[in-house]
Image 1 (spheres, rainbow, N blue to C red):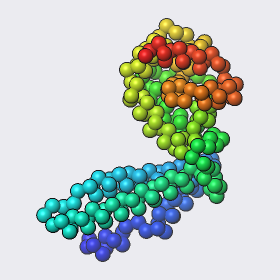
Image 2 (cartoon, helix red, strand yellow):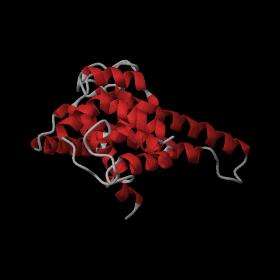
Image 3 (cartoon, one colour):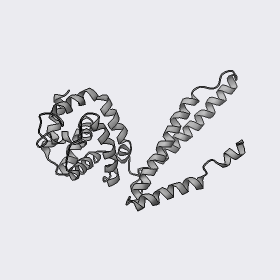
Image 4 (cartoon, rainbow, N blue to C red):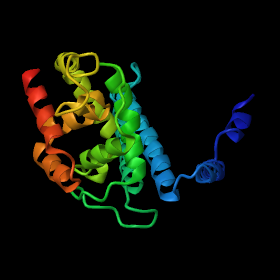
Length: 245
């Protein structure tokens, strides 16, 4: 295949839009609200641009050798311009993805909009594998789990929710030894009963709550009280986290 033929087989804007619309229709048939589906697709698009920005930035930092100073200077200037343009595109894509609705205004950076069902589902996908890296899954009322995650997400802005999975992974990595001690002493398999002040240690949501206790305890208590969740659960996690330090 020559260069001209290869070029004709690259994705064009119409084909990309076709794929996006097809995915939206399929998700709609599966019961996913259009606004939630568009946000998910938008986050994937923003993530792809962010990764391209990072990879381009790495390439741009060094010009091919043996071409002379003028060539090197032109390479670096051009690469910087392309990298900055990709960064701007990634930022715009992220802002669009975290809008309050398909045609609504983007929230202020510090604003904490109402938590949406799709955001809770994304949080579930993030917490379960992290939890299972420390212990085994145990039963907890699914409705309670959603209430807990809604309270956790309520402490964050829309942009913070967009990057929440990465934040959780960083937290688990940075505190792995402490979390291992915590779950060994209070989690499933320990002598601590599932019912009581340490109930959440038997739920994947505990990872999310612990991250917020370490990062934003005051907003967490505010959202916890508003959701009318048992104060003893949060007090129990606070005690357990302190004892495992």
